[in-house]
Structures are given as structure tokens and as C-alpha cells.
Amino acid sequence: MGRFISFGEWQAMAKQGLKDSDMGIECEACDGEGEAEQYCDCCGAYSERECDECSGTGLVVHSESGARVHPNLTFRAYVTHVTKDIKKACVLARWDFLDVAAEFFKEQRLWANGQR
Image (tube, rainbow, N blue to C red; front, side):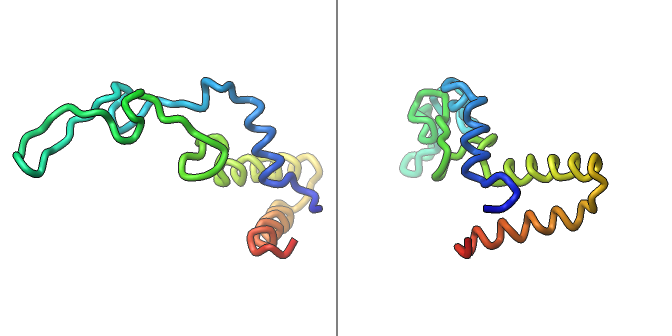
């Protein structure tokens, strides 16, 4: 195990800060209305239909993995969070940021390649 928090551990910790109600956000496709204007190919008219993205609920429910990962639980959010923590630690301990950050990214590359 490395000296950095793993993505899975970080994701579990970040999820604790989210309520179940936070896992659903307003659908961007229909602006939370549940219906979207769609173009009909056969008659050339526009009509209001149930939104395909949110199934008419107006909310898009996110998960921890898969196609709809919550924005606060993504790998990008993890890297951003850990990089900010590395920067703070380097300032306090007078470590070289680039050396520590390189070690973090090397650890992530090894993890992604299954070498851990």
C-alpha cells in the first residue's frame, strides 16, 4: 500500500458527505421539467415528450460507478482533491511538490495497469 489514499477509499469517504438526496441532480436535457421538446422525423413537427435522460422525473440519479458517476465522486475530483492536499503538505513540510506529485501519479499509473 502506498502513502496516498486510494481512489476507492477516497470515494467512500467523499460519499459519506453526500446525502441520498444529493445523488440526484436536475436533468440538464429538460431543465428539470421531465419533458423535452423533440423533433419528429416523419411529420417534421416538434412535440413535448417524456425526457429520455431522466425518464420524466426531472432528476438524473447518479451512482458511484458506471455511466452516471456523481460529479463529486469522479476520478478527476479524486486527483484534484489529493493534489491540493499534496500541495498543502509540501508547503508545511517543505517537501518538493513535483517529487511528491510525481510519486502520486506513478502510483496511480501502476494501479491503473494492475501492477499493484
